[in-house]
Length: 621
Image 1 (tube, helix red, strand yellow):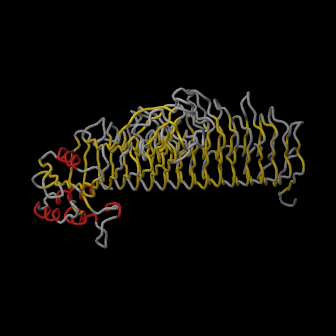
Image 2 (tube, one colour):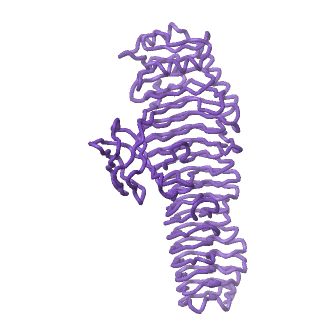
């Protein structure tokens, strides 16, 4: 939205400030059950009404009443209670707002209108509904949030017995005060940091029952190795908050300004916020449970020098979180999952859906290693400048229905040293990337990354250098790889590069256009590993003018190249066994070329080539 449009909205706020207090008190007096009726606040909410005269559902919610209203008037600011009594008034709007929020009962509602300048953080430690359809908050104080909503930590305790993957009942050493709805965080502080990026196994859960010295969890333990006796357990007492409609601005996109934090919350929502120039973090959620960030806009959060610039950040120890329908542009990390702070507990069941993002300075969609057990990116549109579209170090990553428009970097990239990771990329379009998907090495952390399963299906790559790369260098291995049903119009180099240890794989039913002078598939492991049991079956390979063979396997054993169709415009080999490549089978392939080479297949003495059909397509042949 342009500055001119923003100025128009500021004018509306100024007009609103001239509202008649007597008229407002008439609305307040019409409140029912001791509350101010939101639907009666026509003067304050008129601009939010829909064409039929009703308020949006996210504003009215399940109740249609407010306990407190704060407004900017010509003479200053005023917070008013149900009965029309003034809570606070004066020229300092931020103080009036803070005192008015303090006056809202636990679980109550407040409606805010007018322009406010944030001079310090407002801490809200209770359940609350805050509606600001005509409120503008200008953050003036760097280094902390303008608004921070939070529950409390009850205590820390420990498991009295080991808990296995799949368990739902936990015995605790200290059960005092624990209630249904609490959040518990498990953290095996004495374990190896095999979640990645120095993080030990950990995960969050919600309590649905308390019986004796045990708690029952809503979901089962997800960590594959479970947790030992004496594992640390944090017990958190969450609040429920709903915040919507606020517009918030900070002075500079590259300085340490913070917007809204919601921590230790459950069943909560942050909706329809418009945030500009919060260089550090615009919205941070967590540790929290079963909560949503919807239809928010975050622009220019880009304190790159400080390695900040988070648009919407899911923080440590959250579960069942959905971020949907949001726009985050000109941010370093527009949408991100991290395990920072004092707790450093991995999140789980995190979904980003139907979002539009542009990144500048780091991965646009991001999950740090050790930050999440499972994260999903669905139906997101991503544009980046000089950095990956998505970087992930989660235990399980699922990318589906996304579109990546790149300027030469990787669309989907991995990070950090996660062990036994799973990554799935399906039904996704990639434009102009270095790699459609890359599995990257790690040189500086505790482990070499290891992937249990990599699944790439129905990915369409246009103008990319490679469809897929398994990187060289410090990588442990990939246990199983599937590339199926993909399309690559043309590749700048090899369409598929396997440059490290691969235990098994299936490359099937893909369609590859030409490459710029390179082979279609190169497999070359490092000296201490091999590529084994890779099935290259039922693909279509087309090639223009090149001297390289279609498929070259190095350090490969027990692989099969079968039932593929190769179409060449020059005399090139179908297949070559490189050094240390043996015991492979090249069978039942079909090859078309105007000049088929005499030695179509160059195989090692331990490999077998049989049943391959060659067609000479030169004129008159």
